[in-house]
Length: 151
Image 1 (tube, rainbow, N blue to C red):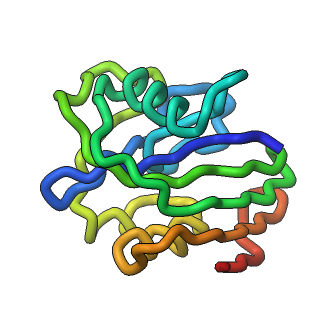
Image 2: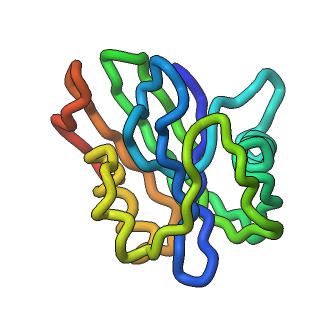
């Protein structure tokens, strides 16, 4: 199982979103997601998300908060355990991101973007829950969401 991080950085009522349009053979191609990535050897989830955000956007995270643990069952790409965070950030967004296009999107408009269906289930929880939650998202081959469990 892969270990990954995902962060929704908020500033002035907007999330910094990444439109995945630059990488070849990208399981997230065409989708809008938060920032994050895979843990490296000997790296904690917090070290990983801080590194990934600096690499992808040139920002330093502030007020980093673990909000959830996401278990993705992904037959096409392999299962994944993701540490989900929210944070603020210092600095200006780097204009060059190898992963895709970065854009500040009003929080209330994020769900109108092309997202993974599971993201539509956990994103509202970032606004309505204060506790750390666990969610399992089960996808079929081809990427359709076929089940979920919220704990």
